[in-house]
Length: 361
Image (cartoon, rainbow, N blue to C red; front, side):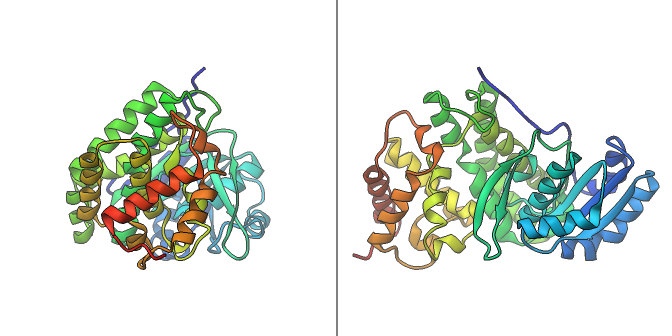
């Protein structure tokens, strides 16, 4: 049985934030806005005005910086009861809004101000402890009621965050195909949806065609058609593909990559981009195809090896440890053949040998 889930409504475009009040009013008249401090300083007054004009009472709460249980409790104490929790900012701010909404039984609205992951469309959220370590992934009962993406705000964000979003999305084609072929389980507990597989393929094609031009738009700090297409691919298509299609080796590898420094300190999208190269090697794809993917990475600034990811050579012992930790992820079973840690380690060594040659014994 397949299960396909998605946000109820997705709105994207330059200046889309001006529709905030109108879009919230479709859901209710009372909202709490959890806002990243920088975004509140830049756009807080405008958001207040947009909501007031639409007849929406929207109190703004300043996000504390990390999605911990203590931070969520602090925000809940300030919020009281509300119909809607909207979160405007990066991934941790959005996750805090999701956690609040889950506790309150409120509608969830995400307003991503960077395009570094596809998390805004999903019903998952990640909790951290006070030392910034991930402590668990939790789930809402349903996906966000609204995802509102202002691409002009996205265009103002740092370039490396946009590149990370490309890295998180470009390999969904490999993970969804692997899960689909292995008859694995998607994030909703159902079999992979064919629609998700088609979305993953379209996402991949869009990113190959438009990423370089979209990054030029980021450099100009101005949204254009290429940027619009890439944001739709990295936020919407990629999000729908991974939740309803399923994950595989690339996201399994984050278990290892987040446990070993300096790789643990890198952005999620850069970790996944590197892991894509390991997955396609494990799949036995032709060397020419893997090299073409790596060449694309070179054009957009994604890491092609652990040496590039961590900015230093990779120790053999660290590779072994990351391979073993990769095997603890549930997604590792979403692959057409059964893998051992030695298989993952061998693929990692191949990637390092081809794309860096910087292995330390």
